[in-house]
Image (cartoon, rainbow, N blue to C red):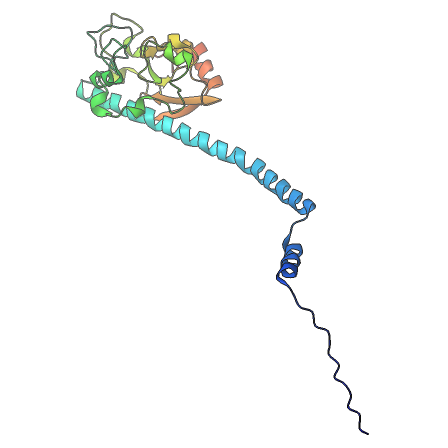
Length: 242
């Protein structure tokens, strides 16, 4: 009698959909420690990048301010070239019969009143008259008499006198004399008109300093401490009354 061995079947493993899901789930899931490590890395990168981004934004705004004043100074000098070297009147006081660099007063008219100013034909753009950081929704801003511009012209251009009805000549100043800066936004009184004396102060928006306009046609960034040194000295680049 012949015997034939019975076939031996190896047990095979069959993956059901549920088992496949569990297998993949355990292969690709993060542990709590791994998640915490990732979060910590992201936090470190953010702490390194955010100050740099903030600084870059501040620099961009400062550049915009410098460009604004550059255009306003250039407009003032173009005016002077058409008016026998006389700079535009700095809007010292509120005389409605005197056209100043910003406008012909009063200052309570709508913003379009800037179009009556001496500089407008040479710098015809409303945005260049205001710093991007000069907020218009603050109590201090609402208390200003003059809301047209963040920048003011040095009253030395008319000798700090309401009797002087035109600006002095460019040639009467030194080339590095400062005739424009951004006024202190915390002090509404500095915006009673569109000019100031140097000791009324400058903006604090740009942290340690601000851009100033030079009678020679350039602009420069000056730190508050150096601005104040010029305020103390007389005569100086600020106290430059011809």
